[in-house]
Structure formats: structure tokens, C-alpha cells
Amino acid sequence: MNTPKPFRFAVSTLNAVSKEEWVTKARRTEQLGYSTLVIPDHPSKLFAPVPALLAAADATTTLRVGSFVFNNDFRHPVMLAKEAATLDVLSDGRFEFGLGAGWQRPEYEQCGVKYDPAPVRTRRLEEAIQVVKRLFAEEPANFSGNFYTINNLDGFPKPLQQPYPPLLIGGAGKQTLSLAAREASIVGLVLKALPDGSNLDLTDGTSAATMQKIQWIRQAAGERFDDLELNILIFAAIVSEDHSQAIQRIAQRLKTTEEQVAENSHCLIGTVNQICETLQERREKYGISYITIFEQNLETFAPVVARLTGT
Image (cartoon, rainbow, N blue to C red; front, side, top):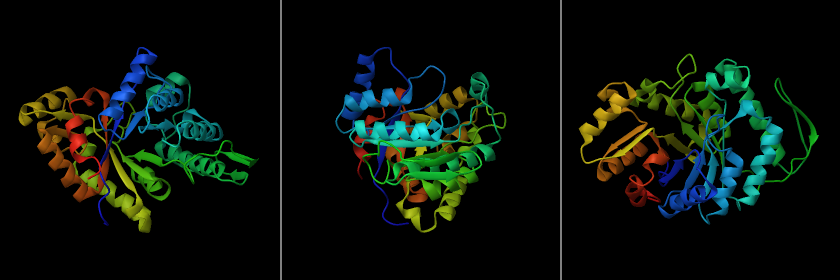
């Protein structure tokens, strides 16, 4: 691996009770030194990503905004490309384009959308990426696949960031991570879904599981591996002077063992010094430099952001 990429940090948030509260969140995220404000894409109680991200960008000057991640099955890629490019233009080129294959079966059922097996959803995502990238290009786009067809369509507007906004593809399985390694600028590591698609598998965050994912990415990326930025979603970012007690609380909350929490790559628990050391060790081991935490840890995690950002 070449010189490690500098650390940067993102905050995943959902909604607000008013425009004022949303703007305050965005500005506070920027003030605390976080790189990016991201929002997921689900039909549950959260804001629609595009208008929410644009409002956050309008309220700030340097903060990047990102989808984390658009569910490809809920939009046609032609219209998604238009929305992404428009957001990039209107945010002055501060948009990070996260796109995924979807995973939560219950929300598919709620929306009346067919929940195909993971390999089918990933193949459809692969075609969507090709459609989007062609629409971002200067010349009119043509594409004929198993899921999508476009004929001599000139995408408008063109994104401000060229050749396109940083593309983040997140995943846990070999097929999706290999696709991300070939096509994305940022590869996001997440936990795999349980077989019924109802929740995430906490055992998928072990050191061995994480290393396996890195190996899949490296193998598929080939020479472009060192150009990739590796991201990880942290579902427990707890700054605490009592390391063991904090682990115990998280284990009880997640209904798992303390050992699984302590080893899990998607957990960061300890003092500011301990967390910084853990992140540096994991960057050395895995190459992960882009860390996403949840909004509830925005303030308490800020000292880690202040110490490591850009290093």
C-alpha cells in the first residue's frame, strides 16, 4: 500500500423538526471539523436525501454532503443521474454520490417493490452505474442491458466535479465489494444483512471478516486499489473513560457478547487516545481512512475528529 490516505470523518443523520434545526445540524457538523454530512435513503421517518442535502450545502461553505446510500431499486438511473448532477452543481461541487443495491426486505414489501435475491440486485446496480456514468459524460449516452436501456440521451446537467462526483458504493459481500472496487472512488464497508433481510449480522465485523473484505476489494481493484478511499460505517462510537463498562453496555444493547463488540471493526469504544490509536492501527492494517458515525455521537466524538482529520 502507498502512503495512507489522511483521515476524514462523516456524520450520518436522518431528519429534523424544522428547517432551522436542520441548518443548525449542518453548521455544527462543519464547525466541529467533520468532512461530510450524509443521509441514508429509506421510506421511513427521514428526510428525502436530495432536498435535505441541498439545504445543508446552502447553509455551509466547506461541508461536503452525501447520499449514504441511494437505494438503486427505488429510482430509475436516468432520473437519479439528473438529481445527482443537479445537486453537485447547486452545492458547488460538494456532493458525494453514494449508491447501493438495497438490503432491507421489509421496506421493499411496504413499498410494493419486488425484493430480488442479492446477486440480481447487484447486477442491476452494476448496470445503473454504467447508465449514470454515461449520462455524466459529454456525449449522448446509449446503453442496452438486461435491466435498463437508454437511446441517444444527453444527460443534463453535467456535474461540476469531473468526470463525476466521487462515487461511493457500500457493501459486505464479495460481488458488491468487487463491483465497488472496479467502479467507485470510495468503497464503503458495512455489515452484511441477515438472510431474511430484516437486520444486520453483527458477526460480520470481526477482524477476519474485515480482512476478507479488503482482500476482495484489492483483488478486484488491481492497480487502482491504492487510489481507492476506504470508508467504514461505525454503529457504536462511544468516547468513555471506562472502556470495559462501555463495551458491556453496547453488548447488552445489541444482544451480543462483549468479545464480539471489542473486536468488531464497526465499533469504536474508549478514551479519545484509545480510539485514535485504534483508528491508526486499523488504517495501517486495512487502509480504512474515512469514518462515518451516527449523529448521536456528533459532539462526543469531535475530539477524535479534531486530532486525526488530515493526518
